[in-house]
Length: 415
Image (cartoon, rainbow, N blue to C red; front, side, top):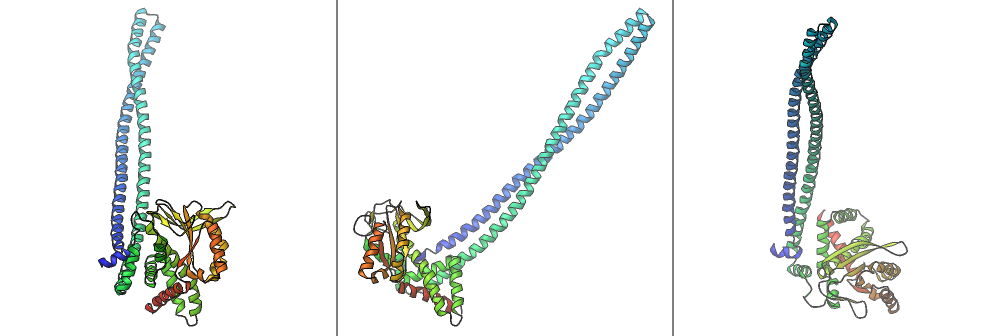
């Protein structure tokens, strides 16, 4: 298994499964932690509301007591004023003096009782406001807890479902690739292993012959790419299975093979180019959109950033890039007629590589089947467009056969 892992590094599937399970566990813990914090806040706000209500009850009792004291003082003052009025009416100086003294004695008591009542009333009003705020906080905390519980439950269920499905796919991919690698010959395994383990030599330019050898992949390498896509790309898997189903219908063979040549072969070529060049750089970007001056746009099949070593694609100007530079690539596979018909389109696509140090159009070796005049015209026009064409991929017929054999093998396996 260790030798097999060197080819596709399939142990990464098991590592990813463990990582996803760890993420699921960590997510649940974080959700529980967040919900626990929210529930603690709710508990604190409920406790604060309880305390505030208790303080308000006490304040209301005190206010009632102070009101009673003020009313008693009011009554005493009313009586003292009535006595003073009666004394004044009697004209008795002694009675007047005594009544006035009583009014003067009650006045401070009334003032104090009134002040204390006003303070008690204001204190009660502030506590009512405090209770109102506390109740609002409780409502907000309750809403937060309910919302978090709902969202956390939904998120955890979705994450668990996605991880369960994803881990199932990863496990199936691991099992399928393990089975595939175990049944191929040692010669094929070495070819595939050599292709995937290749790295550019340090401090040495990557030369055209190296690029040619990597692009001119064997059927074993092509089949390994198709197998890898089949077990890791759900869309590709579905597309192949659909073709397998159509292939089983009598009379469909020719039409299915046309679909394979058109769709599966194109994907294989793109993936072969990506895998051939990606070890030469730090990062690959695919299908980037670039807007042109006329308002239209084009997509770049691949841009390789951060070349690890200088890259030489051929002779002449614009055929080399230094270490650290970047390379734009378009991919075309087809018979000689198709490649020539795509000239104008390839010239437009080349404009999407204007920001690259160098660019090229990689095509199948069918270009060499063109007449010398057409081949030269094609090469000249694309070189002038800034994206010289390299006919280094296997011939279209070879690629067709590899892809048709792959789909047929899948169809036979699923019978």
